[in-house]
Length: 371
Image (cartoon, rainbow, N blue to C red; front, side, top):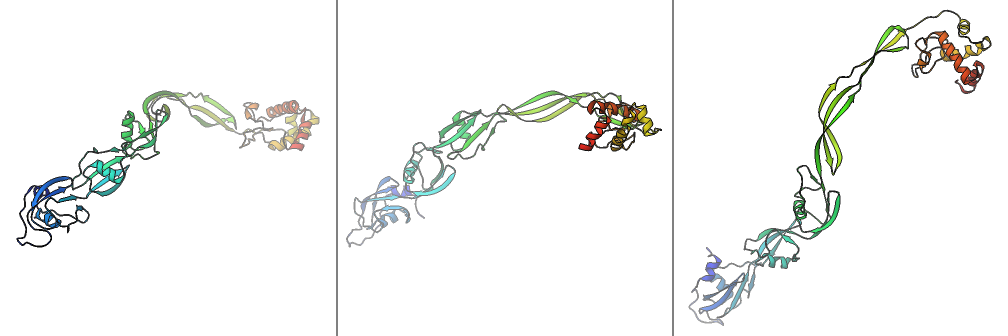
């Protein structure tokens, strides 16, 4: 079993051949042996560097640095230097890479691999020694990031490794509900944008109207098409409590937490007439009763035929026009809209005011298809 290096260096070994001959004597020699920069004087028997290594139980791999070479002759007062290679794993801005080095400190290793910018932030001190087992550490290089806080954007050069470190560096305190565009542990890279959104939650109470419903009920005592409000509707009132989410001072959303009805709405009750009334008498009797001059009867006959086919109870299902002359809205004729005399009286007044009479209204109807 090999002895520990320190013990091997410190010891004095008297191993050698009793034979005499060759270019180099096998007699005891004082040799300056340096291992990773730590030098000791050892006394050994042997002719070559390898003899010195064997005598001190020192193993050297092909990757290690040995000066002079193992088969070189050794003399009294010779100097032998061994520098062991060791692994270092550097996680630079989130990217991991392993190097092999003979450096014995972090600073020396960084110089070897070219990561010697003094602005680079390390997770270990630069003076940290490197043992044979190596070391793993993080390095964060200077980078420019865009930081937006409270609506203001600044470009800052930082060696912070992650978002939380950047915020700490900038003295940014986060509220319990605040948001960050990148995760707190996200690794920062050149050109990243980090936005802090200030989020405030508040309860807001509002009083709101509750619209009433209109309940329509058929009523056979009312003429068809006639409606009558039998009970006025009344709006109700409710208190609504919201949780409002404000982001950077602007409302983003609201959620109903509770609703309390303070006043119940009262439905409007509407009676809808369904009674169809029959009227006797000829068209001429109706026109005469309505006061339409006899010379206008022929024109009125044609126009009313076009409008309702002389059906006093006619209701247009699309527009709601009603009666002989299809008045729109039907309320223009009043409650007795399906009374032919009432409808013709209204129609007589309408054509006189708008066209000057029935003859002119008919002419307009022929020209445009309506009057």
